[in-house]
Image (cartoon, rainbow, N blue to C red):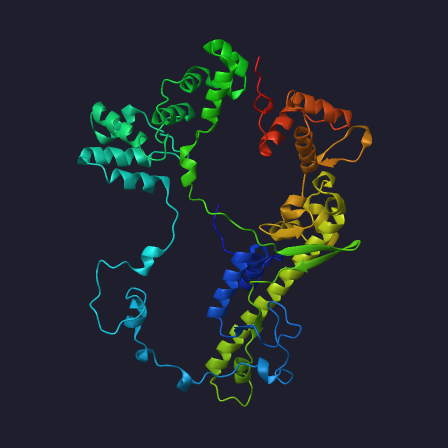
Length: 487
């Protein structure tokens, strides 16, 4: 078959993602911190963008709002030119004195030679000590050979965040190439360091190491941990007393010693920072109505520079290239501001729709949360589901019930018998939480018992689902919730 060339006319529709459209979609899904950072970057890169500083006349401007026409703009809002004569020349600033002001104590009558041992201001920057750095610091004060130091650093580097060693002695010998005696010596040294219990293979060994530090290695508490730790977990103290042939009073005293130990010694050096959530939207209840307020605090308030717009006038002496550059930047700035406005309007519409669908939640709490999917909100405000998904990602709302992510209000439906209205999975979880909270500690509810109680309310839910919900709520199994058995 011979290959031939021919022309063909084809008509088709295609969605082209322009850079401006991509930017608008990106802004829609950014969190507050990411949006503020993006706007700061745009202000630096685009000279046509200005931030309205505190004290300036803003009128009815909101974040990303342009000013009025130049003829209507008051002089106080127009961009003024900077007089370079009033600015201190860079060469007149003694940067060496500025940098050494802190190191030199803040004041000196004479020029002194910098002391190399004098602490820098950077030495006072606060940083939380990690478990590894704390142990390495202790190791550095030991009189060790190079091989022992290498083995010690290898062991410390293989401790998990709880402070447990995830290696065997054979792994240390094989990796370092040292003898078994060296591995035992270095491991014992690390286990004797602070915090007590570090370097154990599991909770059991860690607790025994802590008891040895207290000279209780042969006490009743040590016996309970070595031989009856599983019985201790389910709080069958009477069975422990029978097995150890000790009075229940002595067993309770030993258990009190055990409960004062730290089963996870490494957690106190956890370097995870606390993250604070700043809501994107506030919902206030005023009488019988709800007021939606967008949180604009911390976001730059933008406007177009009137100074650069004046350059585009016909009477301006600027070159064509300059005017063309300013026009492009003006178009980008206007698109950015409009995209921010559209983002804020879309968030408002989504929150308004959520308020309508989940009115019971805002009135009475989580137990009244209704099943809701993205399609419901999308159809309500006549937008695409993907837009709703982007808007509700990493956005938080402050409500009379607390602070929640917008995605929290979407929940799968749990069907009910007899054609009754379905319930949201999150409301079922709240019911489970309340049931366990009000249970009898002597006879706590099992997962099967909770399932049967829910079935009496025409809520069909399996025992395994109850167990999954309970784990998601951070609630312990029934054997750990039961009061101690002393007989």
